[in-house]
Image 1: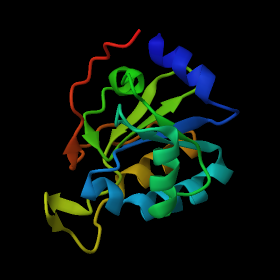
Image 2: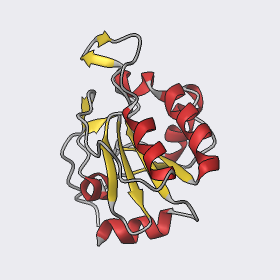
Image 3: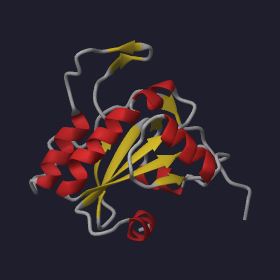
Image 4: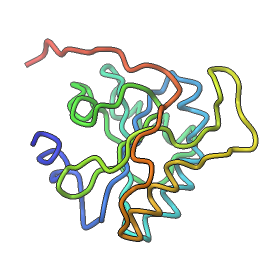
Length: 165
């Protein structure tokens, strides 16, 4: 229910929204910036919304915008999930990790963008599995996502409990 309410506030007329969970301090997360921008540019005209969700509680909106510009993120909204409401609602634990949710708040896909990294510090070239693109293609075609969960590799999202009101 919480995710549904949050997404109602975030979504437009999209079929689904890809929430890209990132942090400004994770080198793996930063290395995916251009791929995130390419995916959003390709799938937004097909009815998929994109949101970049920073998980750094202390990050200001201005710092998030500056980081996004520095790393070449596209023209899609940037949010700072200071209280980890979206983190908790989607169940993500890693950056970068993606949760694709429909208008009802159902998570259709959660996991990695692709298999660019076999293990931490070891990039894989060429990419073998474009997991997110495959999931988005299924969603756009109106099919169930063939592989709705994949294991993301990157930086863990710290447990954060806000003491602020």
